[in-house]
Image (cartoon, rainbow, N blue to C red):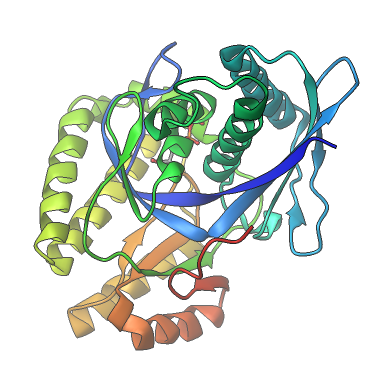
Length: 326
Ligand code: DP6
Protein backbone atom coordinates (compact mmCIF):
# COMPACT_ATOMS: atom_id res chain seq x y z
CA UNK A 1 0.00 0.00 0.00
CA UNK A 2 1.38 3.40 -0.95
CA UNK A 3 1.25 5.33 2.30
CA UNK A 4 3.36 7.89 4.20
CA UNK A 5 3.13 9.72 7.53
CA UNK A 6 4.61 13.16 8.06
CA UNK A 7 4.38 15.63 10.93
CA UNK A 8 4.95 19.37 11.26
CA UNK A 9 5.11 21.71 14.24
CA UNK A 10 3.03 24.74 15.12
CA UNK A 11 4.62 28.14 15.67
CA UNK A 12 3.96 31.27 17.71
CA UNK A 13 4.49 34.66 16.11
CA UNK A 14 6.25 37.34 18.13
CA UNK A 15 5.74 39.83 15.34
CA UNK A 16 2.32 39.03 13.96
CA UNK A 17 0.96 38.35 10.51
CA UNK A 18 -2.24 40.36 10.66
CA UNK A 19 -3.60 41.82 7.45
CA UNK A 20 -3.12 40.28 4.02
CA UNK A 21 -3.20 41.45 0.44
CA UNK A 22 -6.66 40.46 -0.82
CA UNK A 23 -6.68 37.77 -3.48
CA UNK A 24 -2.92 37.20 -3.22
CA UNK A 25 -2.96 33.70 -1.75
CA UNK A 26 -2.24 34.91 1.78
CA UNK A 27 0.57 37.36 1.07
CA UNK A 28 1.02 39.39 4.24
CA UNK A 29 0.92 43.17 4.54
CA UNK A 30 3.88 43.03 6.96
CA UNK A 31 6.77 40.74 7.83
CA UNK A 32 6.44 38.36 10.80
CA UNK A 33 8.82 36.46 13.03
CA UNK A 34 7.97 33.23 14.85
CA UNK A 35 9.36 30.70 17.24
CA UNK A 36 8.61 27.11 16.26
CA UNK A 37 6.70 25.01 18.78
CA UNK A 38 8.36 21.65 18.14
CA UNK A 39 6.28 19.91 20.76
CA UNK A 40 2.90 20.89 19.28
CA UNK A 41 2.53 18.92 16.07
CA UNK A 42 0.04 17.77 13.45
CA UNK A 43 0.46 14.33 11.89
CA UNK A 44 -0.79 13.64 8.39
CA UNK A 45 -1.02 10.19 6.81
CA UNK A 46 -1.60 9.92 3.07
CA UNK A 47 -2.73 6.68 1.48
CA UNK A 48 -3.38 6.16 -2.20
CA UNK A 49 -6.95 4.96 -2.76
CA UNK A 50 -8.88 3.73 -5.76
CA UNK A 51 -11.97 5.94 -5.21
CA UNK A 52 -12.84 8.81 -7.55
CA UNK A 53 -12.07 11.61 -5.06
CA UNK A 54 -9.84 12.53 -2.13
CA UNK A 55 -11.20 11.91 1.33
CA UNK A 56 -10.42 13.25 4.77
CA UNK A 57 -10.69 11.36 8.05
CA UNK A 58 -9.33 11.89 11.55
CA UNK A 59 -6.05 10.04 12.08
CA UNK A 60 -6.63 7.46 14.81
CA UNK A 61 -3.45 6.58 16.70
CA UNK A 62 -3.05 5.99 20.41
CA UNK A 63 -0.78 8.96 21.06
CA UNK A 64 -2.82 11.44 18.98
CA UNK A 65 -6.00 13.43 19.55
CA UNK A 66 -8.15 13.01 16.44
CA UNK A 67 -8.77 16.34 14.71
CA UNK A 68 -12.32 17.50 14.92
CA UNK A 69 -12.55 19.34 11.59
CA UNK A 70 -15.76 21.12 10.66
CA UNK A 71 -17.21 20.53 7.20
CA UNK A 72 -15.78 23.91 6.17
CA UNK A 73 -12.40 23.02 7.64
CA UNK A 74 -12.37 19.72 5.75
CA UNK A 75 -13.21 21.46 2.48
CA UNK A 76 -10.40 23.97 3.02
CA UNK A 77 -7.93 21.15 3.72
CA UNK A 78 -9.05 19.13 0.68
CA UNK A 79 -8.89 22.24 -1.50
CA UNK A 80 -5.27 22.85 -0.53
CA UNK A 81 -4.47 19.21 -1.24
CA UNK A 82 -6.07 19.47 -4.66
CA UNK A 83 -4.03 22.65 -5.34
CA UNK A 84 -0.88 20.67 -4.47
CA UNK A 85 -1.90 17.77 -6.73
CA UNK A 86 -2.28 20.22 -9.61
CA UNK A 87 1.19 21.65 -8.96
CA UNK A 88 2.75 18.19 -9.21
CA UNK A 89 0.42 17.03 -11.97
CA UNK A 90 -0.78 14.10 -9.86
CA UNK A 91 -4.16 12.60 -10.68
CA UNK A 92 -4.42 9.74 -8.25
CA UNK A 93 -6.72 10.02 -5.25
CA UNK A 94 -5.81 9.79 -1.60
CA UNK A 95 -7.16 9.29 1.86
CA UNK A 96 -5.86 12.12 4.06
CA UNK A 97 -5.85 11.39 7.77
CA UNK A 98 -4.77 14.03 10.26
CA UNK A 99 -4.52 14.50 14.00
CA UNK A 100 -2.67 16.60 16.57
CA UNK A 101 -0.50 15.47 19.45
CA UNK A 102 -2.10 18.15 21.63
CA UNK A 103 -5.67 18.24 22.95
CA UNK A 104 -8.18 19.66 20.50
CA UNK A 105 -10.29 21.22 23.24
CA UNK A 106 -7.64 23.65 24.45
CA UNK A 107 -8.31 26.44 21.97
CA UNK A 108 -4.86 26.18 20.38
CA UNK A 109 -4.77 27.00 16.71
CA UNK A 110 -3.70 24.10 14.58
CA UNK A 111 -3.94 25.63 11.13
CA UNK A 112 -0.19 26.38 10.99
CA UNK A 113 0.85 22.82 11.85
CA UNK A 114 -1.96 21.21 9.81
CA UNK A 115 -1.26 23.01 6.56
CA UNK A 116 2.51 22.64 6.94
CA UNK A 117 2.12 18.89 7.59
CA UNK A 118 -0.26 18.50 4.65
CA UNK A 119 2.12 20.34 2.30
CA UNK A 120 5.14 18.32 3.47
CA UNK A 121 3.24 15.03 3.23
CA UNK A 122 2.01 15.84 -0.28
CA UNK A 123 5.54 16.85 -1.35
CA UNK A 124 6.98 13.58 -0.07
CA UNK A 125 4.30 11.47 -1.71
CA UNK A 126 4.20 13.36 -5.02
CA UNK A 127 8.00 13.46 -5.40
CA UNK A 128 7.80 9.65 -5.56
CA UNK A 129 5.02 9.70 -8.14
CA UNK A 130 6.04 12.61 -10.35
CA UNK A 131 9.28 14.25 -9.18
CA UNK A 132 9.70 17.96 -9.85
CA UNK A 133 12.92 19.96 -9.80
CA UNK A 134 11.48 22.36 -7.20
CA UNK A 135 9.75 19.55 -5.25
CA UNK A 136 12.26 19.48 -2.36
CA UNK A 137 13.07 23.19 -2.30
CA UNK A 138 12.08 24.32 1.20
CA UNK A 139 11.39 27.91 0.23
CA UNK A 140 9.11 26.81 -2.54
CA UNK A 141 7.32 24.36 -0.23
CA UNK A 142 6.93 27.19 2.28
CA UNK A 143 5.38 29.32 -0.48
CA UNK A 144 2.96 26.51 -1.35
CA UNK A 145 2.04 26.00 2.30
CA UNK A 146 1.41 29.75 2.69
CA UNK A 147 -1.31 29.48 0.08
CA UNK A 148 -3.16 27.00 2.32
CA UNK A 149 -2.80 29.05 5.50
CA UNK A 150 -0.40 31.98 5.85
CA UNK A 151 1.16 31.21 9.23
CA UNK A 152 1.93 27.61 8.18
CA UNK A 153 4.75 28.78 5.88
CA UNK A 154 6.84 29.55 9.00
CA UNK A 155 6.44 26.01 10.39
CA UNK A 156 8.97 24.58 7.92
CA UNK A 157 11.92 25.99 9.86
CA UNK A 158 13.10 25.73 13.39
CA UNK A 159 13.61 27.39 15.82
CA UNK A 160 13.14 30.87 14.26
CA UNK A 161 11.35 31.74 11.01
CA UNK A 162 11.07 35.05 9.22
CA UNK A 163 8.29 35.55 6.67
CA UNK A 164 8.28 38.70 4.61
CA UNK A 165 6.75 38.09 1.22
CA UNK A 166 6.24 34.86 -0.72
CA UNK A 167 7.84 32.37 1.66
CA UNK A 168 9.42 32.06 5.07
CA UNK A 169 13.12 31.56 5.72
CA UNK A 170 15.11 30.33 8.69
CA UNK A 171 16.58 33.09 10.83
CA UNK A 172 19.71 32.55 12.90
CA UNK A 173 19.05 34.02 16.35
CA UNK A 174 20.20 33.19 19.85
CA UNK A 175 17.70 31.68 22.33
CA UNK A 176 17.30 28.47 20.39
CA UNK A 177 15.80 26.41 23.17
CA UNK A 178 12.95 28.21 24.92
CA UNK A 179 10.52 26.69 27.40
CA UNK A 180 6.89 27.23 26.49
CA UNK A 181 3.81 27.63 28.70
CA UNK A 182 0.30 28.13 27.41
CA UNK A 183 -2.23 29.37 29.91
CA UNK A 184 -5.54 28.00 28.62
CA UNK A 185 -7.96 30.72 29.52
CA UNK A 186 -10.66 29.76 27.06
CA UNK A 187 -11.03 26.37 25.47
CA UNK A 188 -14.06 26.87 23.26
CA UNK A 189 -13.88 27.55 19.54
CA UNK A 190 -13.38 31.22 18.71
CA UNK A 191 -16.18 33.23 17.14
CA UNK A 192 -14.03 35.17 14.70
CA UNK A 193 -11.56 32.99 12.78
CA UNK A 194 -8.10 34.40 12.07
CA UNK A 195 -8.92 34.47 8.36
CA UNK A 196 -11.88 36.77 9.14
CA UNK A 197 -9.75 38.83 11.51
CA UNK A 198 -7.29 39.56 8.67
CA UNK A 199 -10.13 41.21 6.74
CA UNK A 200 -11.75 43.04 9.63
CA UNK A 201 -8.57 44.73 10.88
CA UNK A 202 -8.30 46.73 7.67
CA UNK A 203 -11.39 48.68 8.79
CA UNK A 204 -9.65 49.93 11.94
CA UNK A 205 -8.36 53.52 11.92
CA UNK A 206 -5.27 52.04 13.53
CA UNK A 207 -4.59 49.91 10.45
CA UNK A 208 -3.04 53.01 8.95
CA UNK A 209 0.51 52.87 10.20
CA UNK A 210 0.21 49.22 11.23
CA UNK A 211 2.63 48.00 8.56
CA UNK A 212 5.24 50.56 9.60
CA UNK A 213 4.80 49.74 13.30
CA UNK A 214 5.12 46.01 12.72
CA UNK A 215 8.13 46.40 10.40
CA UNK A 216 9.87 48.65 12.92
CA UNK A 217 9.27 46.16 15.72
CA UNK A 218 10.52 43.36 13.48
CA UNK A 219 13.82 45.20 13.01
CA UNK A 220 14.07 46.16 16.67
CA UNK A 221 13.21 42.69 17.94
CA UNK A 222 15.75 40.89 15.77
CA UNK A 223 18.39 43.40 16.90
CA UNK A 224 17.43 42.94 20.57
CA UNK A 225 17.57 39.15 20.28
CA UNK A 226 20.90 39.29 18.44
CA UNK A 227 22.35 41.44 21.20
CA UNK A 228 20.93 39.18 23.92
CA UNK A 229 18.70 42.00 25.15
CA UNK A 230 15.82 40.03 26.66
CA UNK A 231 14.45 43.10 28.44
CA UNK A 232 13.89 45.07 25.23
CA UNK A 233 12.72 41.94 23.40
CA UNK A 234 10.05 41.43 26.02
CA UNK A 235 8.78 45.01 25.68
CA UNK A 236 8.59 44.79 21.90
CA UNK A 237 6.78 41.45 21.96
CA UNK A 238 4.26 42.84 24.46
CA UNK A 239 3.72 46.01 22.47
CA UNK A 240 3.14 43.95 19.33
CA UNK A 241 0.38 41.65 20.57
CA UNK A 242 -1.36 44.57 22.28
CA UNK A 243 -1.23 46.46 18.98
CA UNK A 244 -2.86 43.52 17.20
CA UNK A 245 -5.57 43.20 19.85
CA UNK A 246 -6.27 46.95 19.62
CA UNK A 247 -6.82 46.50 15.90
CA UNK A 248 -9.46 43.89 16.71
CA UNK A 249 -11.14 46.19 19.21
CA UNK A 250 -11.22 49.16 16.85
CA UNK A 251 -12.47 47.29 13.75
CA UNK A 252 -15.97 47.63 12.34
CA UNK A 253 -17.62 45.58 13.68
CA UNK A 254 -15.32 45.46 16.66
CA UNK A 255 -14.45 42.17 18.27
CA UNK A 256 -12.18 40.89 20.99
CA UNK A 257 -10.57 37.67 22.11
CA UNK A 258 -9.49 39.04 25.50
CA UNK A 259 -11.41 37.65 28.43
CA UNK A 260 -11.26 38.43 32.14
CA UNK A 261 -9.04 35.37 32.41
CA UNK A 262 -6.57 36.70 29.81
CA UNK A 263 -6.43 40.05 31.61
CA UNK A 264 -5.81 38.36 34.92
CA UNK A 265 -2.89 36.37 33.48
CA UNK A 266 -1.43 39.47 31.77
CA UNK A 267 -1.70 41.51 34.98
CA UNK A 268 0.07 38.81 36.94
CA UNK A 269 2.84 38.64 34.32
CA UNK A 270 3.37 42.41 34.57
CA UNK A 271 3.49 42.31 38.36
CA UNK A 272 6.05 39.51 38.34
CA UNK A 273 8.14 41.30 35.71
CA UNK A 274 8.11 44.49 37.77
CA UNK A 275 9.09 42.58 40.88
CA UNK A 276 11.99 40.62 39.39
CA UNK A 277 12.85 42.77 36.37
CA UNK A 278 12.89 39.52 34.46
CA UNK A 279 10.41 36.92 33.25
CA UNK A 280 9.10 35.31 30.07
CA UNK A 281 8.24 36.81 26.71
CA UNK A 282 4.46 37.13 26.73
CA UNK A 283 2.24 36.99 23.66
CA UNK A 284 -1.28 36.17 22.50
CA UNK A 285 -2.57 35.05 19.12
CA UNK A 286 -6.07 35.61 17.78
CA UNK A 287 -7.46 33.91 20.87
CA UNK A 288 -7.78 34.31 24.63
CA UNK A 289 -4.89 32.04 25.65
CA UNK A 290 -1.61 33.48 26.82
CA UNK A 291 1.73 32.10 25.60
CA UNK A 292 4.87 32.47 27.71
CA UNK A 293 8.40 31.76 26.46
CA UNK A 294 11.26 31.35 28.93
CA UNK A 295 14.99 31.33 28.29
CA UNK A 296 16.77 28.03 28.74
CA UNK A 297 18.24 29.05 32.10
CA UNK A 298 14.86 30.26 33.44
CA UNK A 299 13.73 26.73 34.21
CA UNK A 300 12.99 27.55 37.86
CA UNK A 301 10.86 30.51 36.92
CA UNK A 302 9.13 28.36 34.26
CA UNK A 303 7.96 25.93 36.95
CA UNK A 304 7.00 28.76 39.33
CA UNK A 305 4.75 30.39 36.70
CA UNK A 306 3.32 27.00 35.88
CA UNK A 307 2.42 26.33 39.52
CA UNK A 308 0.96 29.80 39.88
CA UNK A 309 -1.35 29.68 36.86
CA UNK A 310 -2.36 26.07 37.45
CA UNK A 311 -4.31 27.27 40.48
CA UNK A 312 -6.88 29.00 38.24
CA UNK A 313 -6.39 27.67 34.72
CA UNK A 314 -5.42 24.70 32.64
CA UNK A 315 -1.75 25.07 31.69
CA UNK A 316 0.23 23.28 28.99
CA UNK A 317 3.95 23.19 29.70
CA UNK A 318 6.72 22.20 27.32
CA UNK A 319 10.21 22.07 28.66
CA UNK A 320 12.55 22.87 25.79
CA UNK A 321 12.59 20.99 22.53
CA UNK A 322 11.97 17.32 23.03
CA UNK A 323 13.06 16.47 19.50
CA UNK A 324 11.02 15.47 16.51
CA UNK A 325 8.22 12.99 16.99
CA UNK A 326 7.31 10.72 14.10
C1 DP6 B 1 -2.90 35.90 14.81
O1 DP6 B 1 -2.40 31.90 9.25
O2 DP6 B 1 -4.47 31.49 10.64
O3 DP6 B 1 -1.94 33.75 14.49
O4 DP6 B 1 -3.69 32.82 6.29
O5 DP6 B 1 -6.09 33.14 6.78
O6 DP6 B 1 -5.00 30.94 7.34
P1 DP6 B 1 -4.85 32.46 7.19
O7 DP6 B 1 -4.55 33.03 8.65
P2 DP6 B 1 -3.66 32.45 9.81
O8 DP6 B 1 -3.36 33.77 10.67
C2 DP6 B 1 -2.62 33.70 11.84
C3 DP6 B 1 -2.71 34.99 12.56
C4 DP6 B 1 -2.04 35.04 13.91
C5 DP6 B 1 -0.67 35.71 13.84
C6 DP6 B 1 0.45 34.89 13.25
O9 DP6 B 1 0.48 33.65 13.38
O10 DP6 B 1 1.36 35.53 12.70
